[in-house]
Length: 260
Image (cartoon, rainbow, N blue to C red; front, side):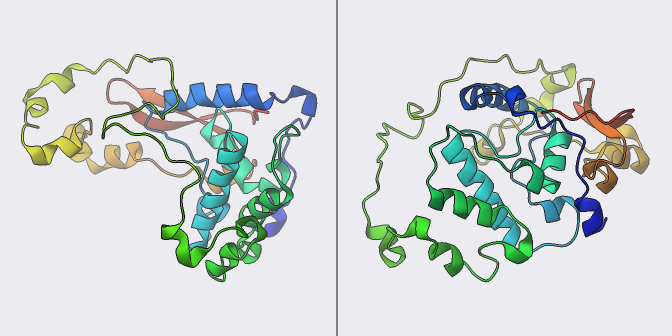
């Protein structure tokens, strides 16, 4: 993939009337984020385009992630959000066409400028020359970096203990997936020591032993979508969970549907 391919417009309806309002988009994103908590797919919302395109990258990709997180904190949802992770990846790769600010989002000029200087090409990205570039941005003009640990926080949450969750947003409870029979064996009863408490809820599977061969293990391993898919020139890919093992396959289907 070259710069000419990246510049090609994507076949997406840019009709603003079809967009969700910020409040609707926020609610929609929150509901889908809860579902992703039980998914092996996860979300690529904060991944820099050079990482997805496998161009080689350094710590400057973290500044892209900072810009995406800043956008989410000020707007309410990630800048390239979509119900489909593959569509999110495409939006990130073609960020010039998809980085927009809602009209009723109350962001200052300085905030928008900082986000745009973080969510951009590597050679123009703020922070590539060093963190001092970000610290010097006008949005941080009231921050005295040398005395950061001495400054009083603008908001001090009241916490009654390690397990106090009163400061977290309330969500409707979702029933977790019903574990298969394999989750009720003796291995589930081995987590008894204090050292094991940190790993409660995590599972490990040796695919070579379970499936009997390296071929199946490689087939089931998670891979980034092919570059031609991210560029919109290849087939569309959707994720499918297989059986109780929640194994992910990338299943090619015809067409190139894109979500708004």
